[in-house]
Length: 256
Ligand code: 13P
Image (tube, rainbow, N blue to C red; front, side, top):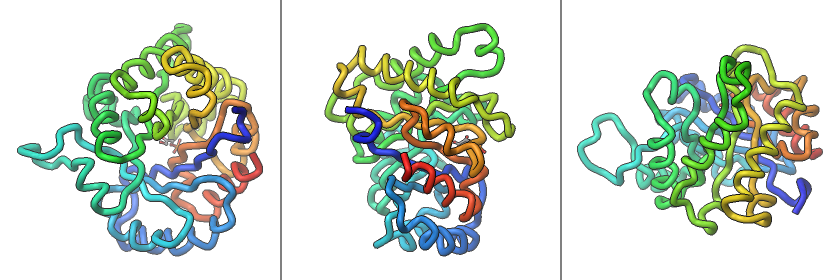
């Protein structure tokens, strides 16, 4: 299976932006802007925006995701949200292991793995984020590090469950900095991710996997990044908060 046969996914990660009222306005603008998309369109929004997002995206081609999920099913975990709570709302995707969670909220490869398993067992599609810091890139350990992050994140994930997994390559130095990885850098690491998944699950599973790039992807650079053979979509931060910008990226992915 080559790129044309894989599912391209453009996902917005709103991070800690948008009140429910603001979310409603943004989705009202997004719905007509992306309705002709020839790729999967997802918005991953703060927990407090999920209700309005699910209601407004119902009957449209926009799928809704959360930005995190706890790994336990229920219980005394004040402030946490379970997979069952999300699926009951109508949420389909969840971002897991974003570098901001790893950096500021003590997420580790092990908790990323636990969350990925909880998401999959609860019926959610995890978008698992991996990526290196600038120091790690300069040290030349990007590929080793990303391979390890992928392996640990997928520990215990079955071949059947892998069909619902998306992996996002997000170099930390490119996030929110305006410093995009070059299309060749993105391609190189996305291909390495596909390779390690092939080692774990076989060629066919690797060829079917959607691998996204994220990190300052915007209306100007999306086409070049998404044109690379192993870059199947994008995880978009800042540019997902503007309907017109996001729609241009969705158009670029629709062209393949
Ligand atoms: P920016 O697009 O704002 O760089 O954020 C990327 C990101 O972290 C998406 O998860």
